[in-house]
Amino acid sequence: MKNCITQGLPVPEDLIGNLQESSDLKGKPGELKRRLKEDGYLFLRGVIDRDEVLTARAEIFERLANVGEIKQPSWEGFFTGRSDRKETAGDLGAFWKSVCEGPALRQVTHGPHLRAVMAEVLGDPARPQDYLFLRPSPVGRATPLHYDYPFFARGSDRIHTAWLALGDVPVTDGPLLVIEGSNHFTDLIEPATAVDYDSKDSPAVSVMDSPISLAQSRGTRLLTANFEPGDLAVFGMTTLHGTLDNHSSFGRIRLSCDIRFQPMADEMDKRYFGPNPKGSTGIGYGELNGAKPLTEPWHTR
Image (cartoon, rainbow, N blue to C red; front, side, top):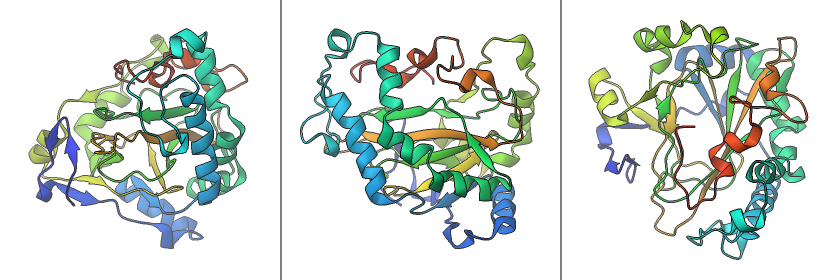
């Protein structure tokens, strides 16, 4: 696979691989569970209807066009290179909450299709967290490698992330990146799972410095794919993941979202549920990268 870049460097072709598709296992819960345990992730094509996804995409980008960040036609997702968000949107956290609670987006992220898939994957009726991680990523951005544990370690120990492509996300645009076999890296996982998160307001997420160096040192590969609207990746809290760099030659923003699911019967982490979830730091949606104007740099999360 060519044209994969991380931290500004092209990924050597021997270090890059395709996410293994598991679409043929839908309807086979036992096989899905086995592959998820073995590989640490599932990659399922076309989980959500394409038209529903593109409607959600248009809804989100029109909101960002209204604050000067997206060119028209907004559904294409081309960055203007400027932002009027601070001047026109008022409270940035409240603005981002309203974007993340758009009806078309919630039909995709919290609707019956994704719930059914996640129930099959988890083996129990599934509940999505109300708090949504929506990620518009301009050219030059990437999410660094990290384990979600202990970030989502309170409440259920069966939380899984549903990473959903909200439009075409080819490798040039910075799609999901999974480190092959990282769900078995006990020397990295054990320190994370040993964190006494009950004594901390917001445990730090352990971020890995270099995907290429890590893959070389471990004799493994970086796994990714050319995502299409409605494609889904599912992984647990102990799978090392991030994204490739967005280096779209068209200036297109990568749009994706993370929805955390857990079995209905498990305890809920109150930080991420309810009409006004407080999030990890207690300030709600204002803590997220998405709440910042697209012209401003990201923090780790």
